[in-house]
Image (cartoon, rainbow, N blue to C red; front, side, top):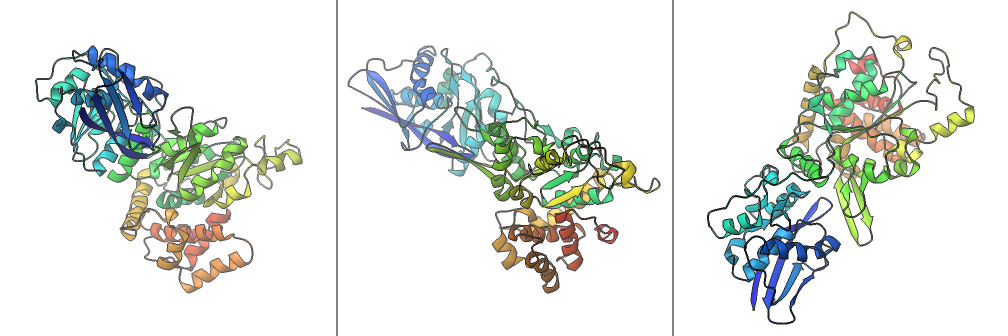
Length: 529
């Protein structure tokens, strides 16, 4: 009996499980049996691997019984990236590769019938999972070597064919092979903040000082934001400037975000770590699967996960489908998306900022008390439109701002110096640094992510400030969830102005941000210089 084991990774959402590919070649009924809960694409791997081995100059044991186990056997296995591990396990069982060469080596890749390697999605999270289990060497398709090398301490071998892999594992001279084509299919390219910082500067916004302050607070604490106002008031312009206020991603955040884009198949060959927070603005006709994740076959992350650590802008939010609006409750609350389908459950991180924009009515012309009402919508239609933003969704939004047209909003003082995005981004970075130091050793990074229990026990408000919050709660102006979010906002306001703890005025500012009331000039002038 001949037996050998190769190693690869199975992905379930963003979580990677180490898989032992065990091959047994022995006497018995001739054939190849694949066990361990493989899906249809994995069953087809038997034929792909057999032809790839034969066309690579090696010998498939066609006169013996070949049994291949994907262990642990209770996990569902999906994808074509198991091909290379299956082929080298069988060759090692036949004595063509020493078992010792596979002991600490991870192998990933899809095989063609000619023995070539093809790129596969999800290489980065696979290598991250293997690194956590102690692996220090990985073999991947050549175009994805740079992606795998993003994991610190990992020796990466980019190969073009099965013949090259066999030669490398045997310590022989690696033969020449045709280049590997990049991963086929459509690539989902994000607009990343660095691409348009210079095009959309905060200094370009006319007036709206309270909206600018709300943007700064939202960016500093990672808070969700709702912008409302008549058509043409500048809601989209405001949202497009938010990525420019966010600092570069930390190494940990960059690795997390790049891994998600790898899972989505959105990394082009040669792409490095994503250093800038991403920005996505899906159309209001987007499906629930495209926005939150899903799809047929393998579950892929949606745009809310691809905007992790960045901004997801939902313009014309009331026009999104009802099932999409209701499905946003979980990610807005927990910062992650769990997709359950039959026996499979996939969880993806979604700790980005969600910015929603809406008009006051379907035609967008309603502006009661501001420059005249141009709305032609029936009252019933307007009320139905406004009810599309359901109570549970509103309760999960941290900051509400009403954006007024420039001619009726005052337009600001033309002689006043306007701050640029770079200047505000420096304050946001300083506020986030204070949070990083405060949350050292915790599982969260920003004020918006603090669990309510930890907020009460570890970061309570001073007595008088807490009383202000309790008064609003007991009067019915805030829900319990709303009080928690106002508490978090108060800490962010304090961080923006460089204070050690929130005071009464910080809580008042947080309540105004939360409820959409106009901000006091004194509150906006208290920012750290």
